[in-house]
Image 1: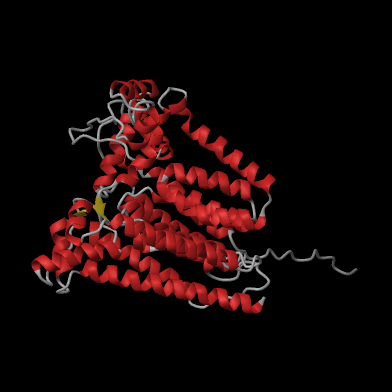
Image 2: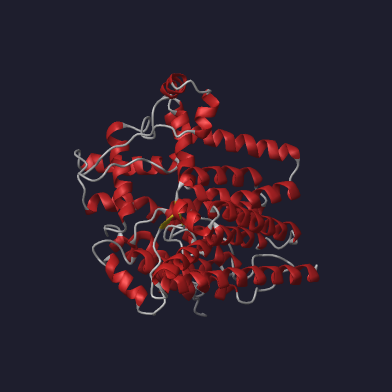
Length: 474
């Protein structure tokens, strides 16, 4: 009798790349967990102050007086209420925490909601809300979640290139330096902005409008997504779709603003959204054309070995003979029009032009605005991996130098962060950074700013070259 044997079941081996991805993800997660409690920049203290104030006294009056009090103030000054609101300045709430200097909130309400949650969680563990590494870790917890979401979104963005895209973000030293080592909150905004761009790539106008609204209520840079949103809405949607998207975005804004609206403090909260645009310093720590201009002013005064400083705009205007804000707005406007034109002319089938146009918009702002800080190219680094590999398009082949673009943007972000703020308070002192900048003879920050200008021009040329090739194929 023949022996009966069952067929051997061969279990399919999991792809090696999946195990490798998991190990690399755990490596990046471990580094981030270690960095949660690091002191970061002084902005971390500000964020903790805001979180403690929101958790202990509530959100309603954290920006300023009630709407009724503002009306009374305008009436007392004999001013029209609309003119009073528009020209201000509106009163703002100031408070102290942990014996530090007075704080006031100058960021949109979405960011305050996130910090309120962190403050409430810390209050459950420490009712007195003391300062310390534990509070720092909780404030950095939401950015950690944002980082995980970004990696997940990039992993899902392409079947063939998703793993590479995710790891280029997750293991990027510039990203880790910003979040969590220096304590920036950019990955919260970045996750929302990336999700909005991916929604635009799918043609989901309503979802992208909602995400753009939330992103803008978390960080003012959300406005940089509006040109791409407008171009694609005009090119690919109809008025009914516009109406649905606008209503969804408006409903979302009402939901985010509800803690202030319901308490009668809506106008002060809206004033908080515009406070970042009222800065009177020239490119504070953002290495761009205006940092170069401030450096040149120092060179004219002290010679070629002078180190650039943060310059008040009125003082620079007196020296230069013109208001740099006017020139900056014109340059940003022209560059924005070029980004919109690029996206308008791009083939609809190749959706990589969408993140490319937003990336260029971020770079245009970072190069030409007077309100640029050291972390303001972070979104470009998040979007750059979307240019790598195939994106499911039938007309597009792999874009040459896409990885180089990502590497160059990452290198600039790392250099800008390190030269301006090092690796955080108590680890590298500002005088040590100044000595490091002086080692090159000419201020190293000015050299990096000049390299940033070259990078911006090279990116623009590369993008228009991609457009010409894509249109030639079509």
